[in-house]
Length: 111
Image (cartoon, rainbow, N blue to C red; front, top):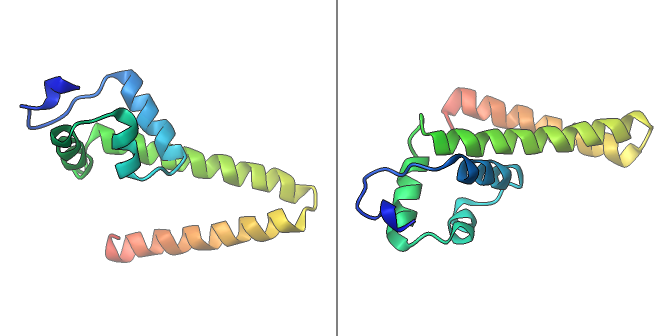
């Protein structure tokens, strides 16, 4: 990753982008991801700057991973809830409630 030092933006190969999507699915924080990727301090700065761009490919892959991870959890909870598991029903309702709150917060305040 040394090649990124003197650049103002970072470009990632498809393998790294897939890893970033997988880390997103696990909801790993960005600080943990840069450690796993073994980035230098300069590369970390570029990574964070790139992530903060709304149209960034890096950000898109990470957010896609978060959405996939949420879907997988919700789908498994729904399957278990359909079988009558009350804990799964409660957990799924809890997750759906907070997802609606997050959606509204984003719509109203951009947060």
